[in-house]
Every structure is written in structure tokens, then in C-alpha cells.
Amino acid sequence: MDPTTAEVGGVKPSRLLAVGEVVEVQGSGKRPYRIKRTVKGHYTCTCSSFQNAQGASSVAARSCPHLAKILGKEYEAARQRAAGPTDATAPTYAESKRQKKEAAPFDWEEYVAARERVREEQQAGTSSSSGSSGSSSNRSMLGPKGTSLGEGYETDWRGNCTFNGRAIRKDFDPTSAIAIMQAEKWDTKLDPTGWWMSEKLDGVRAYWTGDRLVSRTNLDWKAPHWFIEKLPKGFALDGELWRERDGFEVLSGMCQRADTRAWSTINFFVFDAPDVEAPFEKRMEEARKRVPDGELTPDEALRGRFGGKVATLPFIACEGQAHLDRYVDAIMLQAGEGAMLRRRNSPYERRRSMHCRKVKRWDDGEGVMEGTNRGVGARSHRHESLRVRMASGKAVDIGMGMTESMHLGNDLPEKGVLVKYRCSGLFQDGTPRIPVYEGVCYDRTQPKDPEVAATQIRKKRKQDDEEFLKAVAADLEAAQLVPPWEV
Ligand SMILES: [Zn+2]
Image 1 (cartoon, rainbow, N blue to C red):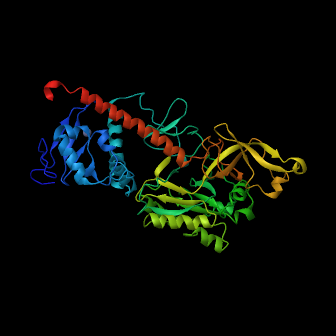
Image 2 (cartoon, rainbow, N blue to C red; image 1 turned 180 degrees about the vertical axis):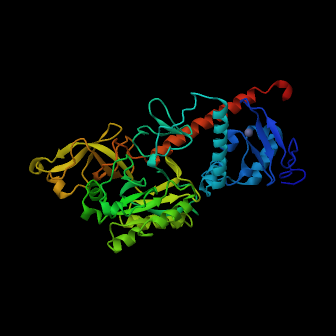
């Protein structure tokens, strides 16, 4: 583009915009769209058809009806020719902007400043208007250690809990459950460079409140005295009780019993210090100072046959997608579950958080045990598979993962208990592919179906299509509504 005339390939724009100049164009909505000539030598528009156009690799190649209206159709065609072929698989402009923002380290200073602003506004609000019933702050809703769950949390009359208007969980019971950070699925389109990686341990989640070691449903794990005494008094820790890879079933049962020999094989791997008001790195530093057994990798714990340890989990700085792939591959080869990613500088959020992500190669779910399926003929004495009821109401038969003893009718989960299984995605009808029995699940009360990337992508794609069609319809409508004296 010629910097003074803005000519592209010998074609001049119908209207010459200065660099940085913004022109408003009335579209179908209340607010006009804003067109801008950028310093980099291209144009942008705030309309959704520009933002969602394919080919983020080259913003120069984007156009929309509003740019065509102001700059001329010939000029827009020349600009697109000059930009060359676009990459149809590249993310949209809006999407690539979002991805970059989400992958970058968390802005802790801005976060603290924003919270301070909210606090000031709330104080100003409460001092001027006394007895307003509108803001139902959760004074009664207590987190661990009897502290309030903090600003932004609300419960409605049904007891459903939200954070800044976003639902936390349908079955969230603020009076009994402990609000802990839960991992969101990793978005494979994000660049993992600079995120912190650790192994995702297939144990049970444990939260040390400062004086109790509890599950996410606030049930006490039956740790013996000597184990509890290793934990720092008055200092909250979040982590996982873990014994070995692919050992969920044995571990899950052990944590239910105050068996000191069993607990001497269990380790508590700490991955956060929720009550420290600081970014992730600083919280881990504080946790490391207080745990008795320092930092320990799962492999070190296995190699040394360590048990009964309270240690922090090491985090490795990810160098990029290839590094993450190698890391997860190595864990999968050892029958591990996958990896966790933590965003740099991020806060501890007491909900499902975008700053805490899981990378897994298979999915898991929990269903209600209903009974067993017997073999036929000579095999009629055998329990071939477990009949499990999913949250969706569908039934699934799980034979893989059962021990020989279970097939013969011993150690079968009781009817009505929650069992955990893993699978490799879901069929189109919503039943799990290749389900494998993992064990009885004690720290949950409701069945939960696997969340599969494909279903989420399908849902997102449908939503994107609808938004795109809406944007196109709006633009068409706007084009027809141009009054004749303006043409
Ligand atoms: Zn536009």
C-alpha cells in the first residue's frame, strides 16, 4: 500500500483515510461500526463479518461490506488480490486475538487493581445506601477455614452458586462443599509456551484447610495422626493423594480407612496454596517452605518407594507445543493420566478455571452401578460386565478393567454406588467408546458423563454458524436499508 495515496495495485480508494483515522458506518445495529486505517498498512472494521472472516494469518486480506461501501468495491478487490491467498484453516481475527490473550501470562497487577476498584465501589455503595436488599453478598457462605468465599460469589434462592454471574456448578452446595479450583480442558489451538506443566495424577483430590484433610465434597479423608501432623497448621494446601499410576481403585479405597500401613504408601502432592494472596509461582514457593518433604516428582516417589510423604509437585516451563506433546507422551507410556498446565502469574480461582488446564488423551466419567451381565451357557457363572447408568440416563456395559476375581463375583461394587470409568471419546449416541472400569468413586455423589472435545467442538461450531448467519443477515439488511440519497 502506498503510504500517502493508499493506492494498492494502481487502484485508489474512493475515500482516502489518514493512518489511524476512524470512520463510523451505520449498520443494522444501534451502534455504528468503526472502520480504521492502521499503521501497519491495512484496514479493520468492528463488524462481526470482519472479525469472524477466515484467514487471520493476514489481516490485510480481510474485508466486509462496510469497507467496500467507504473505500469502493474495486479497491477492496485490489487489496485482497495484493494480500494473496488466504488460509482457510487459520483462526478468525477475533479468535486469534482471544487465543493470544489467553495464552499470555496472567496480568496480576491489573487483577489486583480491578479487585481494589470493585472493593472501593462496594464500600462507597454500602455506606450511601443502607439496607439494600439487592446485593446478597455471601456472608453466610463459608469457604475453608471459615473464611468468606470472597467477592463476586452469589447464591440464588435455590442455592445455585455463581461467580461474577457465571454458574459454578449445578450441584454446588455452598454450605458443605469446598469451593476448589477445577481444571478446564486445554484448548489445543493455544500456544502452551511459558505455561507451567506437571503430571496429572490419577489419585483423589485432597484439600488441607489448615486443620482438616478433606475431599472436594468436604468429607474427611481418614489419614492417621502422624500423616496429619506432617501438614502445616493453619496453612491451606490443595493437592492430590496419590500412590501409583493406574492405581485409582486401590487408592480410592485406602483413603476411606484409617489404616496406617496403607497410608504409609500414599503421598500428598501439593499443587497450590489457595489462601496466599499472590500469583501462582509465589504461592508454590510459600507451599514449598511449609511442606516437610520438599519437592518430589511422581517418578522419584515411585523409584524410592517413598510413601507417607507431603511434598510439592514440580512444575516445568513449557517450551512449546512439541515439548508439551513429548511430555504427555512420556506420561502416557507409563500409564499416567496426562498433564496439567498452569498459567503464569495466575490467581487461585475457586471454580472451574481457565488458568488451570488438563491435557488428557482419554476421557473419564462416573456412573451409577446397577448390576452385572452374566455370561451364557458354560460361562453363566461369570459376571462378564458391569451395567452402569450414565448421567444422561443411558446404560453402558463395562467389562474391561474388571479383575478375574470380579468376574467370578467377588469384590463387585455394590448396587447404587458411583463407579469411575475411562473411555476414548463418545459415540454419536452419547455412549462411551472403549469404556474401562477404574474403581469405586467415593468423593462424588452424582454421576457425570465424559466431556468430550468432539461434542464441545460440535456445539461451538453450531454456535459460530448461527452467529455468522446472523451477521450476514444484518449486513444484507443494512445494505437494503441504505437510503437512495446516500447512494
Ligand atoms: Zn464491517
